[in-house]
Image (tube, rainbow, N blue to C red; front, side, top):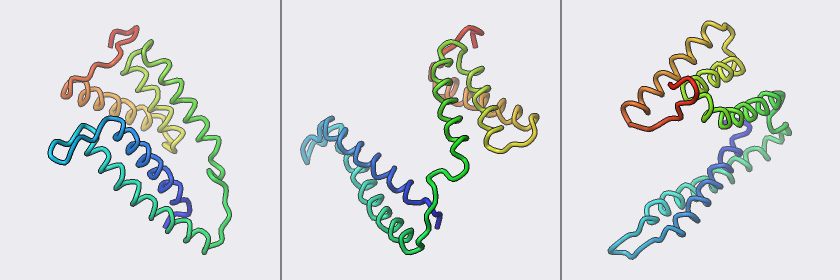
Amino acid sequence: MAKKAWLVSLALLVVGIASSIEAIRLGLGSVHRPGVGFLPLLVGSCLAIIAFFSLIVDIWAALRAGTKERLFGDSWVKVVLIVCCLGAYALVLPIAGYLLTTFLLFIFLFRIGGVQRWSMALLAALLTASISYLVFGFLLNIRFPKGFPGL
C-alpha cells in the first residue's frame, strides 16, 4: 500500500461530507417523492463512510510501519508550480481562449511531469487539447471561451 494513502482517504472523506451537507440543503423530499438532494446525499454518505474506514486503516498501517516522511517529499516545488500554473490558466482562459490556453497548460504539465523530449510534450499537448475540444465542444455542445484568436 502507498505510504501516503491516508491523504486520499482524508480528501474523499471531506468531499463526502461536503456533498452530503450540500445535498441536505437541496432538499431530500419524502419517501415516496424523493427530492433533488436525495441521491447526492446517498452517494456522499456512502463515500464518507467508506473513506472514514479507509482512513482508519491507512493511519493504523502508517503507525505500525513507524515511518515519518514529509507531505510532498522532494517534489514540493513541482506542487507549487502546478498550483500557480492552474491559477494562471483560470485567469488567462477568458482572454486567450480554450484551445491556446489548454495547449500551453498541457505543455507545461507534461514537461514538469517528466516527459523528457519537447516533441513528445508538444504532440501530447496538441492531442489532448484537440481531443478535449472535439469531445466537449462538438459532441457535448459545451461552450468554451473563444479569446482573442477567435478559436
